[in-house]
Image (cartoon, rainbow, N blue to C red; front, side, top):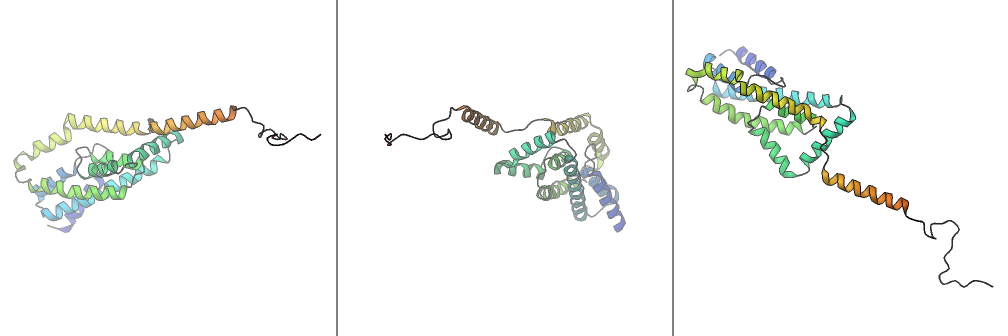
Length: 223
């Protein structure tokens, strides 16, 4: 197989993974290349995982730049959500696992990671490892699906359920900066601190707070 075809496929996969929504799944491109052009399966899987990870990385970094154009209130909402996601180790592990083997489209995951200013490089590495596994499975079973390749691709690309899921995820992504994700416990502590400060401000002054006042404890009046 001429190297130029691998280069063309890599650029195609990279470009598809730059799309924030409604792009064809990478595995379908790899399966098509394996069946129609007989690419080497090992090189095909490695190329697909590398090109897709690079595209998603740039997509996430692009959305990270986009968040700085938001109003302050929207950025504060995103920062509150970010703090809630990383405050516990279990949530961080679950987030990484979501990027390794996620049933959801990865484009919206990287868009959300960029908006939340999460550590995109480790998440991209997790995504790369997961795609090595899933692409290997798809390419290995490509021969079995050869007879039904046309119907499979048409169902994946044009399925109403797939389109509806993409629309819902895009709407959820758009709502992230609009929702106040403030931690309730933090808000309660802030309110209690505010009440205490107000009580301290209205407390009547003692004799020691009044300028010029002196305590008579233990002092006898002079005659």
